[in-house]
Image (cartoon, rainbow, N blue to C red):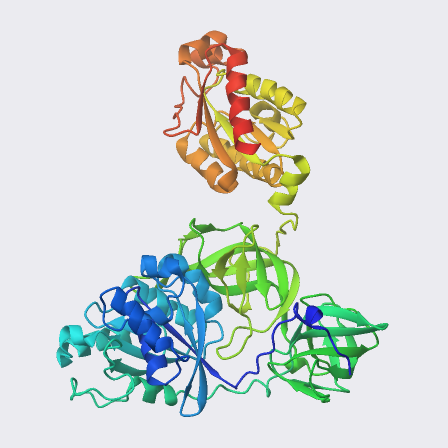
Length: 628
């Protein structure tokens, strides 16, 4: 048996033996009393560390308060100062000899991303609702999150019931609303308990203030939560976390997510499709056993000595019914956390267990309306929104569809800065929509930061719009020359140059102009994502068409208005087009027979008054400020 040092094991996941404790998540609207409830639970179950109660009493006294149970959790000064819970906290406690783990999930919208990871393994939930306020927007969001992470056993606590005098009619109305909400999401409500966490009513014991209530106290309801279903009976899955070599022998390390493995079993290394036999099941700092099960962190010695990659998946050989699904197109149920909307075509990294995959949003299938929880067509997913979307993967990946009570399919989307931007449980193989084909865009694994470090500057698109003859191309070409001398990787996309090649099949009808702009925008985006500065010199006369270009390009967009008087443009008339348009020989010419809509709020305004050197200087200064 091998022994792995503490330094080597620090990179491995800590073993968590599933079934030893029951994780429960506590969620609810901000200020509805979650932290107070948890503090009271710890007190009523005698789970407070020695001396902590005295500390809470003293802290409360100094603030002129009665015993403030929330101080148990709000240990960070920022939380006490702001009066909100910022991070997810995991707190163990015992009830009648049974182990529980409380997951305290933040209530503020900006802290909801913490809940995605904090509550992912919860077996049950306590949804805290203020009895006086009832169902609020955050209540609906938290209910959607409970559905997203697959929690079926839900206890609703109508907290602060003392504020309505434990009035039966008031509390029954709130209970009706919350049951109706959760039933729309197919979430089973096990108990609805009127309570006061601050005073302990119906927390540990029944309250005399609500003699009409015949249900259990909260502790009695928690004791009735079913024990977690065993994952040992499910087909074996072990995502590869790392591969180690000791004394010339290779060991594949990881955490068993479900099922069991024993020496002599034949496994498939998913990504490679090769089979190997388990020669040895190894543990560190533990007696040898030839069998390991769900929740254990182990190392396997395989024969032949194959080398899987991190993120690869080991599963049983010889039984197709026990194999995971394989697809390059995934249907996911999304909770979107970024401050800007999600649109089709955006690329991210999908994290699934120890693996990461480059994915692109291929379709937004439906967006949830939080007012009535209906699914509706949509072109984008709003911040903090819920939706069903289809992702395409750069290469086919193995996965098990999301299922409550298992670790299967619990995907998370991260952006190029490694920030979590969405919870994305994978619910199946994505189907091609009507008119779609099997195109799978791929995202670069080279980050923007890496490109910026390599080139010495950032990326940007400067979309230069203005009347024909305003000087856009002239200014752009001079700026290109000057920036290149400074070592800036810069490309000019000039309207005439584009039309001579990429868009030579297009005319000048409104439809063709829009298509011309769409193509240029996509090229500009590709060039910017390669780390370049892109100067687009294009009339692009309509606000709606430039808005389309901005949507395609995204955060790299800068709109530059070359503000040249129409009289000066006509006087210059470098191509003789104004004269031809006036004579009627050129139809739909911008500035004569077709309208030009000036930008309403451009990023930069550069005068095209004939002083080319000054105009170039203003543009290059704007570029340097944006990317250097």
